[in-house]
Length: 221
Image 1 (cartoon, helix red, strand yellow):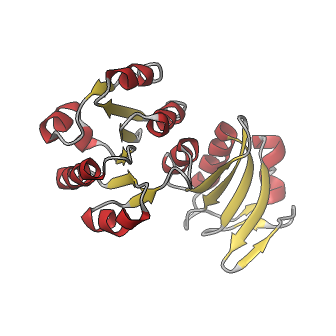
Image 2 (spheres, helix red, strand yellow; image 1 turned 90 degrees about the vertical axis):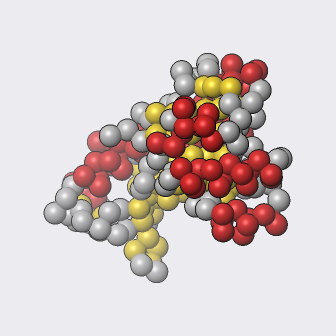
């Protein structure tokens, strides 16, 4: 089943987030009170609407209450951020990421129901999109327009996978850079294996990394 996201606020940060999410197989709802921003988002997705995020009735009509993850992408109006967070929480949205430009408000937003806080100065929209689109992407580091390094969480019920047999470079066009196992981090060799609960660092394009990750975490015992 496809994941669903709502991006509320379509400034530069929110628009970049929508653009990057649109490259994945997910459902996206995007809203802003400024028509020009909504028009820009419409270049990437079909469900972009003019809407005040503090209008609970309007959000429900658009289906925002049914998404898996809502991102409040505007940061300049903390009053609206607070009200929107409260509304999303009451609507039962399971994951709520809030952009906060002033660190003072971080504990406040967490108490109100934000499950994650993001500062544009610390994380770009493209990085956040790739992090939230996959449950197993722990973090994501964009190298350039094409290549990235992703930190991947390996599920606890996979079978051990020998790296030589897995052959990430030839079979998936990615490079397995590091394995973190407990408190130990090492560069893997062909005789090593990917084990349950490992964290691995993979270099490649976003799509290739995603395919490799899906394959590894689908190999159940």
